[in-house]
Length: 278
Image (cartoon, rainbow, N blue to C red; front, side, top):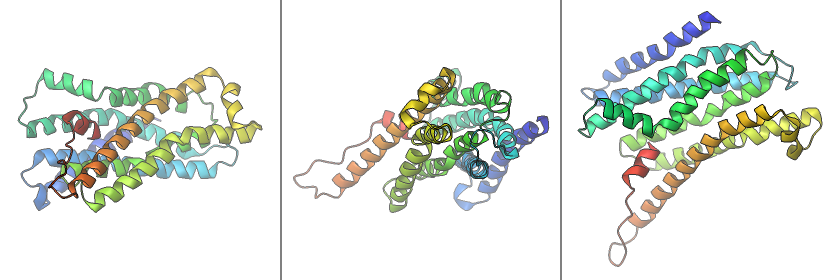
């Protein structure tokens, strides 16, 4: 267990440093430390998401009995990925700090406090994954439910599209066809792999024990339903932000294509809404 945790602790920060070094060699990033850091952090998040979703698919597809079947990759990748959530809290702070440096803002405690306030939900999610989900998935399951752990790992399918969308916005490409196509893929994967995931797992469990979907929550211990609700709640909120951002961009695009005479100017997105989308 320890050597897998150590491997993850070295892999994700090391990949971040390696990405920064590689991006500095590209002409478009030379002399642009802020963008190098931001793109590197999102690249690491995307790679972690690909690894997690691949591991999740292997585990879920290998478990015929969704309760008792086991796969070594379930517990192993969970241990490997735990350091990522700790690293990512710091990486998000670096991105936040450098985005504000680009705007000419100073650092210090006020910036840290603003970061904690803005990213409170994401930080809380990461802390919950480390402090609660890790002990539950590795120590308290007694080898049961690898299928469901695999499904949870597959929730990361949408992350590369989210990260790529943020990079496009960072480089003012939010009105391009590429951003629109990526946005559709992001909406579909986020909805299917993060929102429909929980009803699907309830349904699979119901099929295993011979219960209809609506009776499954009443057949489970309260802590399982509470855990599912805690994990799903932020996903619903983030999906709402994604949809609001998509609607705003769509409205801007429609208004910008109208003739200027006799029509209102395109609606601009508020600073708060821009921050939510990024």
